Length: 356
Image (cartoon, rainbow, N blue to C red; front, side, top):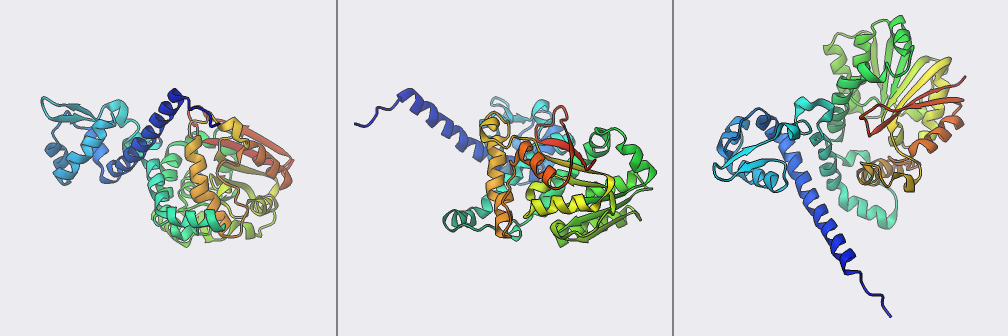
């Protein structure tokens, strides 16, 4: 005999799914608001009509009006029916505008929109295995550069490096540094500018990213930063570097085990590996209350894991977690691993690994 449904539980779950549908729709419109500059335009406006907002943003009024309706229904924008005016509260602008820097969550909503473009290819992988190639994610390099750039500008020199005592002094004195998975190289260029006595090398398998990194270095007049298209798993530079960094890039590697071993070999005996990566447990049960848990597992399935598998890799995934990270670092030859957190940063853990 079939069990009876708990009607309250059924209705509550249906309500949850309605929330998911509305959240997905608002995500799409939030991405539109970021890309069109509507949030930025509204942040400095007093309550205004759709025509005034459209004029300020340089956009078509009819589209702006419909977008505003979605924002009002989603309780992102406030609406005064009697006057027909709209306002973006400053408390909301603090999470949606470019002026918010790394607090601008609208930037990250774009990731979800991009992942939707590969859904059909992911479905084939569910049925047949394999993966989706990096090249299928059109605009991914630029999007990641935008996200990592705003974080690096706000935290790299001010928070990340000072987090580990003595690191800034070594950089000031002059050491050899490499960044693995450097993307468009903004982090390297920031450090090269701040620490002119040190020499910096950036490695990434994206020719597009390396080209952009070189252009920025040239524009900044940096002579101590160089970039190379390279799969970090094939890096052969024994005892060449005093410091190697990897900013949210190890979990993206096709062959992270080989990459970590290559990093260990490339460090001098007293060298340091500074790894910033996803703050999570390796155990699903421990991540059930993670504020970004559903999003990070989704990013893993639809990008990080599948790109690795397409290359015949390990498919480590975004949520590899601290336990797995410590295990892999130890297996790569790092005998000491220190992990720190930064207050307010719910996304990353900060690892300092050494061989002695």
